[in-house]
Image 1 (cartoon, rainbow, N blue to C red):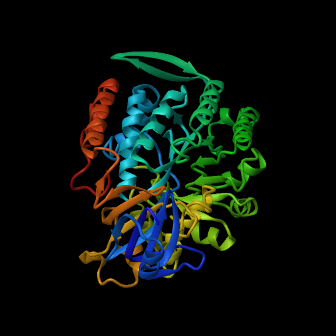
Image 2 (spheres, helix red, strand yellow):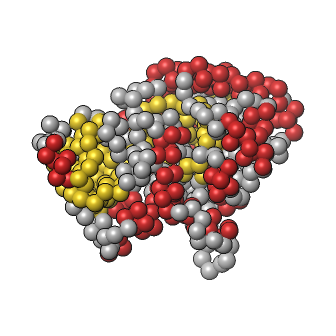
Image 3 (tube, rainbow, N blue to C red):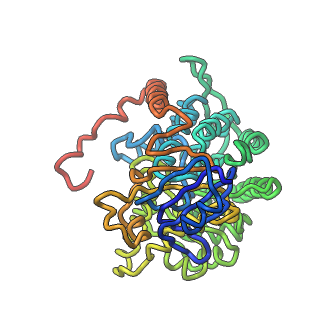
Length: 478
């Protein structure tokens, strides 16, 4: 007996043979897959009290988003496309304008968005890039973890220090009263250690902590280069902590020589490390990633990918693992990994003027099995195989933009969107069926998010962030 039987579906397994099975079934017992194969055979050998009819649906592994940002869910499009204004607002919101309840409300909203888009596992930095991390106290990260756990998806929460110099100004709210205080590197280190101790491996192993540290660029202000020895010592402190506690290490915003420097100067590379954006890389960068088995996260819809190009085909040809990330849901992106798969293909095809670049199968690997490998979970998720965790999504293909019902991998990668995801299962638990979210009231999550956003705007006097800029209509550039 199984607990759940999914039958009559088109199963994209992403197993080592990359099998695509017609009229197939997946049987689940507890939190594990126990069988994948022809519907008649699996149904006969694994009858179950709960049967999900996947007729005219694709059954496949849940998608994995390897780079996002907590907090961004409540600041979407603020500033009206004026990048500097948005960045400054985020810095103020995350350091002095947010409360623990802000992070809880935002995490539920972001996890809900991921779930409804078929993303069953994601990485979220606890703040804005590597500039403002809400790690002055562990309770902000803990409330974020609470929200994700409530929705039920998998999550890696990336925590670390701000970019120097220190101390940094932070604020705590007592009702409508703000109390400011200075935060040192040592205080952020203590908060990160506390989060590892309290929340790594929590929620039945679905919620985990990973560490991050600001990327050191060659074009940073002179004072940061003058303190390079101190920065290197601080970076090694975090890297040593991560290796000791066996948590992953990630960085946000590599470019133009910084990966090679991260290896030579800071000893940050390795198979437990994954670096985001990674634009305009040098040959030395690519070689350093290849030789150390450091993984790269490409964010094709991010602003960094407008400013420079992550050389994905070149990295893949060199043997580097490359995966995809959304870069969060702000200022102008979303959690829909189908959108980012499509964007990745066309982004690099346009660069090379070659429509054969990044085949659909490779791109699907980048959000499933390759992403699972990047997060150290390739034995648990990323493909539909007996013994693996039951992290599964069903895509409703009975729609004009997905028909005719053939060539399913092409249909999913080229035409599907997050709105086509009908059912989502994580750890063998059905979290969404027929687009209806089961663990929480979706309306309550949305209303709470709106309420916390309004409170935050009043705290920072930020209503002007919602105004339409003067240069918006009828012009070629803002």
